[in-house]
Length: 311
Image (cartoon, rainbow, N blue to C red; front, side, top):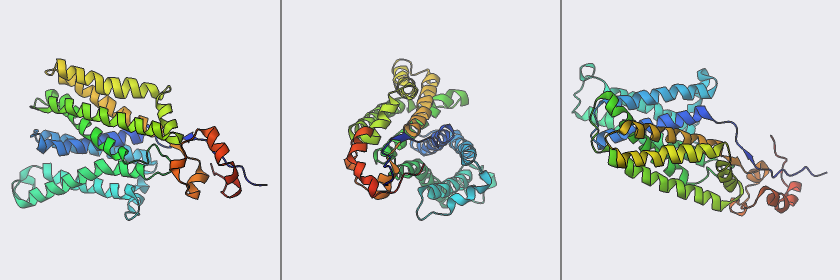
């Protein structure tokens, strides 16, 4: 008797808050590190960026479940974006620490070539830390909601937005100037709202597993994450505050950061798998614009040729 072909769509349950916090802290930290020289921010913000990334690294080690085995993550640099990401993190921690260290601790001048070279390496590592999670998730062919070039673009946009949120929130607390960040934050809010709209629209039109992900985001409890957290608290409220009360940036910055964290969580929890046998067979995913029941009918005959899905 031929094994039953299971075309049931199911959401991923492996990743949740811990990985969301890592994605939020690492992206925001590296966005802040890159924003600091561009916006002429005080040196304190580079130190804040380094501190946020170190905090995020602790969270990532907790997410791994066995921190003492985390070194294995660098064992597949040639094939795994996760392994490459670990190297980028190590490179950033080392070079960023050197770039923000007091001049009296270093054998070179802060204005010399060695200092500039270390800063360039730190910036390159920061950029790759922003980008690699998007590439890592987009490589998951079995989850079409992530398997799109729109995802790295969205995460990069939110890294910049989160960085502006940190500046808005921390500037009054650190008693440092952050001139020009308010209009930049307003622009980034608009840009990310457009990116989010196009991303969700494209995934909804794809139907199948990707469309089911969008439907999950529009049903409780994820609908609260998306509409109350990401859209209202993270985009609408901060934009209104920046337009009406630019001299009160703390609330706007806090809203941006809340929305940025919840975006990562919503993206992860809304990931829906394509049935495993279809992935193993390498069928054309562009044909999978079907509901679960339609998939069952369309691929009913494939059960005689494809291996049974393993749970």
